[in-house]
Length: 95
Image (cartoon, rainbow, N blue to C red; front, side, top):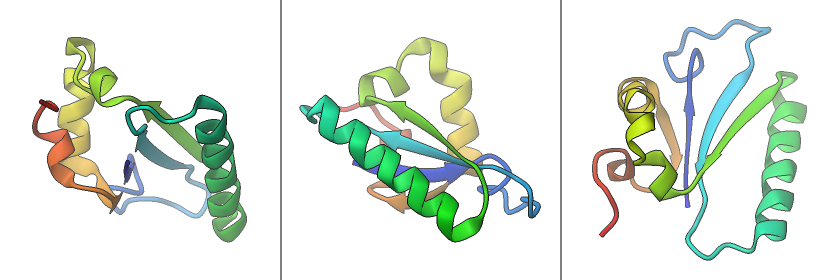
């Protein structure tokens, strides 16, 4: 699993009303129902603690590395703060 904040929070330019953008890379083989429940619980906990809306971007590693997401990967490399996992997930494809 990998998690990182990005957007204005990742750039440390957030305002008190800014939403919190979080990238979550879903573990291979994760149970879909359990994953959805965990994401919902996480977003609610962060929103409850901060008072801000939380926007989750839920991707598999393969989806992150899809050619259509190249601009997103560059943005994440430049502007994200890793919460959990290895930052190298943004720099290389899984083998």
